[in-house]
Image (cartoon, rainbow, N blue to C red; front, side):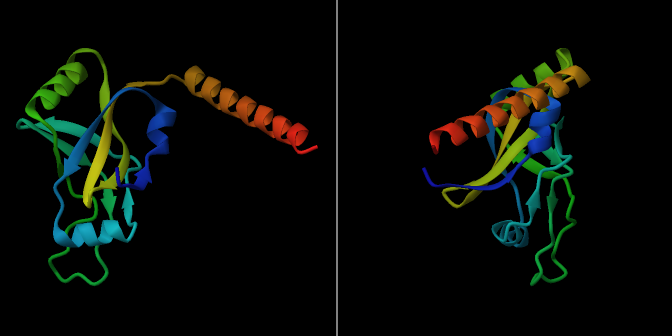
Length: 152
């Protein structure tokens, strides 16, 4: 499978427990696709809402295409996500009933198309974030120590 990562949303993994992920297409204009190919795409602080039977990506930043004309769109406009009706209904039901939220976790090209991976997420509390940071630091220290012993 030919997949090229455009952006990872590290903040989503820091702030949330991601329980399920779904692949969604994104409706973009031609100038936006050219800008994304240039690497000007950010998922930081973006989220997904449901309105009118559609999933909408809010606050994702795509820098206006430099060589574009007055047809360039707003950098943070709301974009439609292409999910099946069953997936939309499932995600909407979970977000309304159980206190979940839907956040984009990464963006990538797959077979030339821009895709966004969205995750069904539950918020972390302060102690969960501190534990995750401590675990990551401990793992890094262990790897560093093992590397020192293996090079001797």
